Image 1 (cartoon, rainbow over the protein chains, first blue to last red):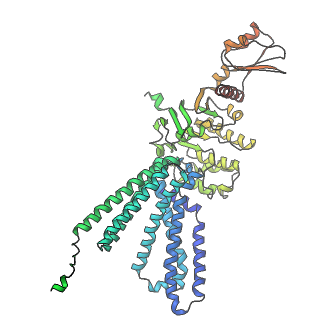
Image 2 (cartoon, helix red, strand yellow):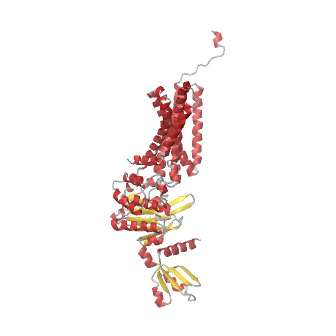
Image 3 (cartoon, chains in turn cyan, blue):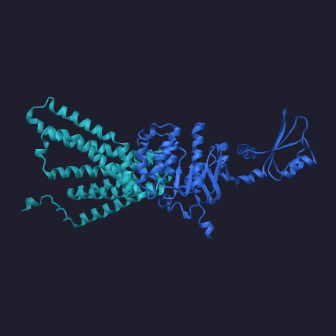
Length: 268
Length: 301
């Protein structure tokens, strides 16, 4: 499994992140015990555990995404992987897998000391822990893929950046219009679902764009950027289209808001 | 396609690469036969790196295609890299990985990896096993890269300026290793280099790239038979008409006499017929390169 070899290679170069997370965890522990009365200790530990863990996991994912391919290309190191019999899909999967594991492990390590020594483990149910891990994983995946795409777009310094900016602007504008239409009829649950759908479709698009950047761009940064831009623009368009269909469906299936006639109550 | 064509280790056809307005490669075509050592020469910016990137499937050319060992390199890169060893111009292994980790990394990727030979080679090169790649000297990085490239017993070696920045001893060691590889296994070698003196002893065929165009692609021995340097003493000027049948590339006259590089025929006939005082010399690869590229640059300017 050549993806595993890529995974290990990424880990070897970034082991220091783990030490950093452990160090931060112990600093947190010190912060937990200074200036905190016993009653507030639990609350503070919970906030620290969830907040810092999520923050570090997401920061590591974003930084990893921004450097996992872009930096290799800029420093002309990407050829090392291409010169060996490693499938292009495995290069991408190995890097994304390593980034996610590193992000999750960093998040876990930074909150491990307060989790264990602050007694937080007693108030967390397994389900809650699972939810937190799910949020870390989903957020890390989105940020890793997003920052990978952005790093390629920025590093290539080509005119395709204009398409990227136009596509993202159109997407934000479209999402805003759709959200406002749902807010106007008070469909807040529908709006939440709309954002979820947009996020899922855009994340899938980012994943495909990232893979195509590696598979079709290879060591050519500009060509990789073209693939990222084209795929992403299509994905954002598809996301908006699905969102538009969803909003239309919500508005159609929703009972009409009763119009209150002025003076009608008085008449009865 | 004939069987001979299908088995050619390298077959480049009409390769063109553009970066915006710059034409980096212009319809370059050449082949490398099995067991041959092909040296691609060129000045900085002549298009060598673009060509090597296309050759290894790192970059898609604007036009043309590359076949290595009978397979299209863009679509069959993964399978081909089992049979091709590569040393890049810039040592590109991850800086944090030690030689041992790199050997283990590569050993897991190739079914035919020869661990004993790789260990032995590193010992011979005196490359430390536990020092991160980023902290090795330039020579040690090149030697480790060569070891990794030779590990799977490749049928084709692609070396992009492997001796760049090496001291003479390290350079000699790299060439000795290549010679022993050639003697043992008859591996086909494609090499780009600026070290013309070093490559002269091992190259069978030479290509010269200039301004993105392949100026020349010929067997080294044919080149040496075709090109000669003619010198004459001061105040014994030689008429260009006398040299005309030999297609002179460049004629220079100065206080110490004159010299000309001729590109066809054997000017020794001149000695008997016209000027017995002339001297005819064989050209080194470096002199040949300077004469050809210099003449082309003069024409271009």
